[in-house]
Length: 199
Ligand code: GLN
Image (cartoon, rainbow, N blue to C red; front, side):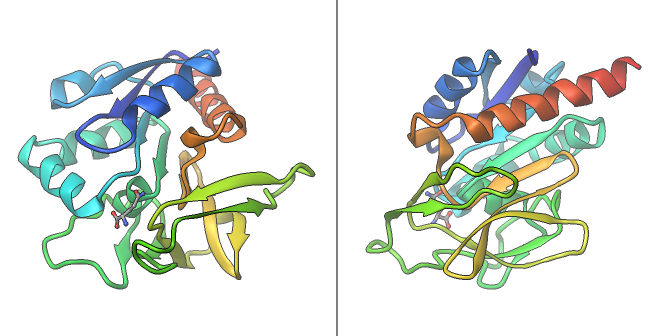
């Protein structure tokens, strides 16, 4: 199985991701400083509050090192606020919000409505006959996606999960259910990326 994967632990639902990764046989380490990214084979950016996470990412000097880790071939998994950070842009972002631009999507924050719009929905996952329960918490959706992006799930006509190369994103929180299919998918991406580097 895959090796050591980091979970950005500035804020938000990082512990649950560590647990989910452990369930699929991946050693997860919490990342708060740039030095802790060294040697990682993948990175999860969890849900939380994208504006806060963005500020902390800049304050802790993590932006460039995360980009470098991705450029070096390490897969990235962004959920909810993490999807917003990984995106190219947001239609309704705040002026000082940073986007890592690691996946060619434009997102809409709090797209399903603000506090009220936390809900669960059964999602059809591309290529999988079994529906998946998506937990949406003030979730964004993918407003538009570039040609290179594969949409993996939609809700109400909006893309809510996607992949482009080594970047996987979901608008919902897969770490909050016991269903480990998306973490397993990410673990496989990490495993493949490691094979590519070793080859
Ligand atoms: N609404 C939050 C944001 O814009 C995301 C919510 C979440 O990650 N659960 O950052």
